[in-house]
Length: 125
Image (cartoon, rainbow, N blue to C red; front, side, top):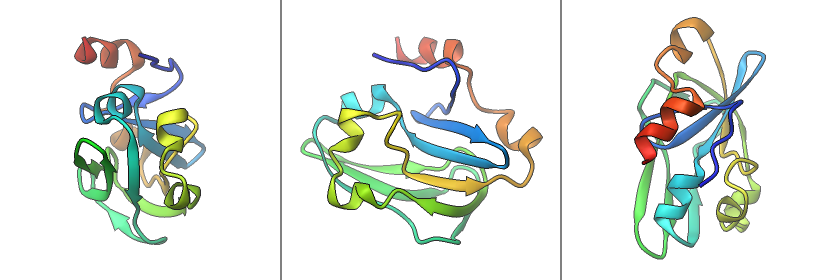
């Protein structure tokens, strides 16, 4: 299982990569491995606003369907449209296959509850 030190993580197995006031969000290697072969990803529309822990989409595998929960509040400013035609990219490279990017309103409060790599690793054991 791969966990990248430079990312932040949620208890629900989403990762967050912060670049300026934008956060890229995807699912972790642990999550994609648990799901198995991913066959479908449903993502929100641009400009949709979410509160922390809202469902922002669905990922379906040959085993199950799982809701995607957003670990921070924000407005969707980018969507990884390549996942619509090639959802298996999440299995191939979960950290390179971000799902959405959101505009972060308040980095201090939004990022406080996220886990650092070492903390996330402990919940995956």
